[in-house]
Image (cartoon, rainbow, N blue to C red; front, side, top):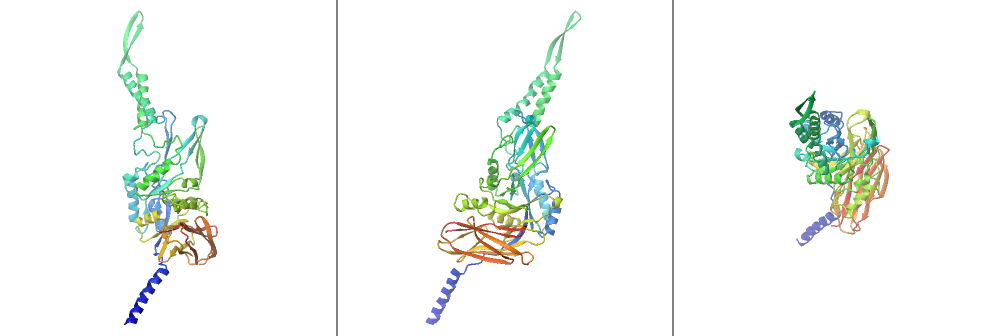
Length: 495
């Protein structure tokens, strides 16, 4: 009996030791393929939303993230009476059209028609634009109309209507410009006085002088018309928080990011490495528009959720040691309160010029198939980005870090004591199960610590001893010129 008891205790101790030595595998999550940044005919897209959902479903996608234009309106007014002289150009948008309530109702109706397709409503917001030049010089430039943020996860129509965007005067603001704009409206007063009051005139008829009382119809009507026109153009005489006649820097963008954060939504920088340039003549005036690439602004703004990292065009911000790694380094050093996740961004408007829905996809790692789970994964970085041809795609089968009993995957933090041995596991397969040449790079704190060449299905393990310095690991896989798979980071810290 005594020996049986010792053997029993030995068995318990053995199980405990094995539990400490053998890492627990990361929980398997479902992979949901989604396209982010999709437009329909609700705003500037070519196709009805139901048709977009049908194409997405037939393409093997499980979700689409809409990014309908929030407010597409630009205007210019001559100083000092900017409202009176304002010229406006507007295209179809959520606020400029039916409004946020009908927008959300339309999305809900399409969800009912396509119950297997997850449709996440979102908007593309232009926080600020500004002008340089003047009509007098016959040359003007409109800046930053494509320097935008995508906003997801705000389902309350009233809150969605309140986003900080140029032209959305949801909150009343008055300035000296308001006083300038109300000044011509005051012409209504002398206009009414002239029309109401008769002026005494003396007229001579031969040797007779006749007194005539006349109203000054001409001048009175002109003043009244100008004043009423000024009221109509300027009412309620509020101005934008960041008016378009001056460059406000990054403050409008940070204001929107912080507002979305307070409302519980997710904000995402859109196409930070893409330029938008063009020009046209409006009468004798040459009007140009210019949005320069702005990847460095991602390092100068904070608390946004994600950024467009993978497009149909090549990008550089995510190359080892460049912008994204600098940002992640700020986070692990405590200089930034949260990291920003890299996603694949489509910008789909329709099928013109060979455009397709699905060459760039964001794959979400979720515990359940729901809109709430997708938004939670977006906020937590449980996702990876893919660029692919129609025939086949790279698929992430494993990217995790394990030590003792703990395991962490994309967006998570592994907390282990100093001098602990950690193992980074990498696995990549192909969607058709075939063998494809592959080059895999493992990035550690901004430097390529491992580079492997192989074939799919591919697996590799990188091991090292954690010295207590906060770490992040991320991985990129490429096959040829088209295939790209980019993971989000896993962090390692002391408890």
